[in-house]
Amino acid sequence: MPTNQELLNKQDQVQSIKKNLDIPMGVSDAEAFLVDTVNNASTLPKLNPLFKNVPAGNIDVLSVGRRKLRQAGKNDSPTGTGAIGDRQIPYAVKKVKWDEWLQNDDVYYSLTGRGDNVEQKVITMIQQQFGVDLQDLIFNGDTAATVDDGAGGTTADPFLSIIDGFVKKMKASTNVTDLATEEPTILDFVNHIQLLPERYKSFQDIAWFITQKTNDKLVAMVSNRQTGFGDAVLQDGKITRLAGYEVEVVSELQSGFAALTPRSNLKPVFTRQLRYIRTADGATAAAKDATYHVLYGYLDAVVREVPAVAYMTGDKL
View: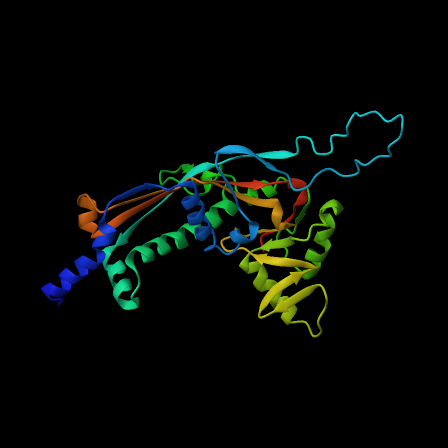
């Protein structure tokens, strides 16, 4: 049984996070916060997210046009070739909300057990979870996604239906290998690279985007070989290269999907707007002995050129 003094000490130490806050962050602070948040995800930092000041606009596509150079002569007319004209793709961010009750006891025991700064500890926990959720949504979002409403019908999925993510947008590509119900093989991946148009193979950042499940199957296939081959590289128990291209294992990536595309083709877009709200007021907060934290942000997921994607589907991926 804690003593009165121990209870008072606990109250003093968690008091700082009981102060109500409603902070619209400045653009530089918001970007810094988002950078730190994104860095908690496994794949998003490698995609070099874009940070914008306006909620809608355009970003450059993956590449400019080719074969527009022509011979110049004295009778040449200055008509132009349209090599770089209007090669942009629109973005439009959606407002998202992350909220959570943080128990005062959890914060207190973390503080006393590890000697953490209570304010920094709370912000770190929020950024870690927010970063994981952002990666999940940006890859797997689907505005048509539904869930069972419990009454024999369906309703919009509260998480996935926020935006269309990379996977849904990449599936608009016509460069597809469908494995159906077959188990994937390394040869399937080797053959699949032929579907990626040649004009995109000059990009230095082409990578496979696969699930952990697919990675584990590839590891087993490579490990069971009696001799090594050059079509897959196994390092520290992970597939690092496959058919000559780097491998990116995406946490939370939906099953049944794999894609080959330049990393620079997938662009998370955020605006430099962020709002953090915290409150410990009200009967609910008192009953829960907790503080309520809300974070608002704005994001979109842009595939810069759909033809630059060659994707695979299959029940066993």
